[in-house]
Image (cartoon, rainbow, N blue to C red; front, side, top):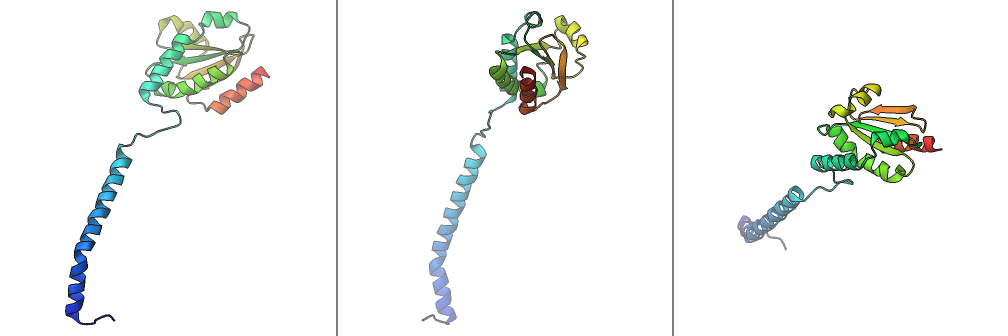
Amino acid sequence: MVSSNPKDMASSSTSTSPLMKLAGVIIAVVAAVMVTLLITRPVETASSFTPLSGLMTLKTMAAESMSYGDAIASPQPTFIEFYADWCTTCQGMSTTIADLHQQYGDHINFVMLDIDDPQWAAQVADYGASGVPQFTLLDGYHSEVKTWVGKVPKPILANVFDQLLG
């Protein structure tokens, strides 16, 4: 039976008050721990890209890419990337280009030309590289098949590569 006496109700609420306070403290602590975990946990992405990792990938690819002279002497199609170290889009595209090189490197020459390096001034002019990144795909006869400027999705590049290789 529930009492309707105000004195009984007051004593009842004060007897549960410490429990309510404890529950409130527990909820606050759990919420604080969850917020801390969400804020401090590392964010994982599919590629775990950072500007530094993009720059390092770009530099590694440039060091390992085929020389322009060897590519032009080859009967294989050639994919030329005009890039700059300071270009954040170039850095962001580096993992995409590395993946494509892994997939198509046996059939397509991958060349990287730094537009800030004076030795490539003639090629920059010949291919009209006025922005970076610029990607120029040449067929086996070194005729231009397609040129892209800026960020290009991997499926678009792969589709053109597949069509060229037939």
